[in-house]
Length: 159
Image 1 (spheres, rainbow, N blue to C red):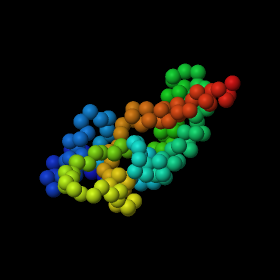
Image 2: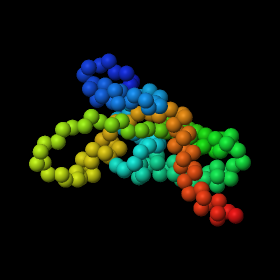
Image 3: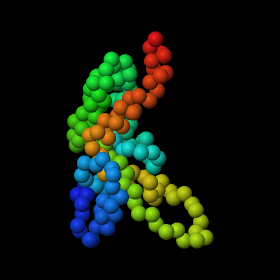
Image 4: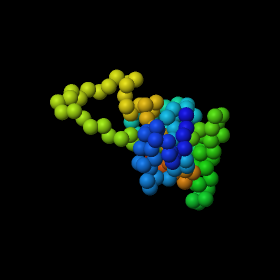
């Protein structure tokens, strides 16, 4: 579900903690505890690459990479990026671009064995994290970066 960022509800310490860790981030207003398959998750690790929304996003980026990298102007590049962002948002339910909200660090007990938790208990797994929706500027920046990846090789291949 989603909750407003500015939570004055003292019974929801997770929302209050999440809101306090957002200073300086470009966000659009809601905390998400359960990303759906249309969402694009920003960040690394914890199953982000295999999230269905990210798999679909990368497929759409591959389809438009050549048009982006051969575009004659910044305006045309922006139009291609916007096209990919719009495809994500046009899904039903609409896809969102989400970034992980850092949970508060828990103190470690001394002499505790460091073991990697099983996948279902992985604290970094998308379903075990809090997320925040990023704004349009950040979504466009993420998409443009994805469209640029591998551009020198692509341009060499096309010449």
